[in-house]
Length: 397
Image (cartoon, rainbow, N blue to C red; front, side):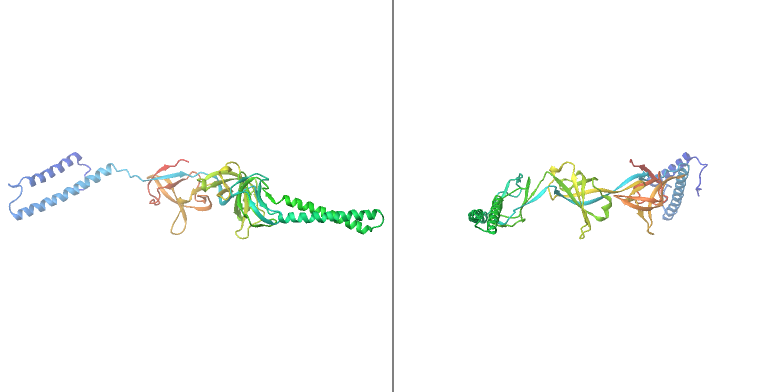
């Protein structure tokens, strides 16, 4: 049998012997007759067994030859390609997002100062009106009747006062009756003056310029003192109103800059400044209102549009933070990451137990288990185990 170790044998000679053996076998099969293939069945079986034995020895020889070649020139084992990032301390800011609404900073309700039936409404919802423009006209029949009645009573009172005054001057009449007549005239004059003022108020006008957002009363309905007829808003002076959970009350202040995003405008962003913070907390949802003034771009917005307000509530100074997706957990419930280490065999992956801190947006602060300068594996680690060879590609910051 051929020996399995062949360091002294010339490799070219071995290769030649293998080729000759293969050629001999092939030649015997190709050319029949003569003494190449025996005629008898027993001789054929004996020759077949012999050739099979020789074939097994040749296979062992080829395997030994391959092992010898690999021992002198080993194949390079390459590790799996992974991406990594160098751990560096950095300042992090935690942001909070809350839902909000667009509202008008300048709005007013139009109401009558006295009761009466509405004869006519001069505006429609969506109309723009200037301050002092007529909104509605009330029925003035009742007030005109009161004016006529008061004027008649005043004429009589003046005549009675004139008579009492003459009697008083002639020292005939009573001073009390004179003073009563005088007081009666003065009361009726003031009443008539008030009625004439109210007559001028049958035409309800806009208290300020803006757009008619909503009409509460229509022609034929009864207006009452203080009951709104219409709502006017100024679309050029808008604000953002955000109900903020009370846990952030210490994180906000007037003058603080915030970012506003409008989903209906393709998440277009606007800059704003807090100008008012509510003084009370809503007991139903434990929030307080924060009002924000827009710096620019309010012409694109409309009242009651949905908005999202983002503000910062905490600053972390020079901390090590990692993406939350690369921190995994083992069967014992311990959090770990994979880092790269240089060894004599090459770069290998090492498992590192870490302690997590606060979550800052999409990153987690690591308080223990990682140091500045560590090479932290980020992507391609799904099938990487502790000690596996890897090829590291550093990510750009």
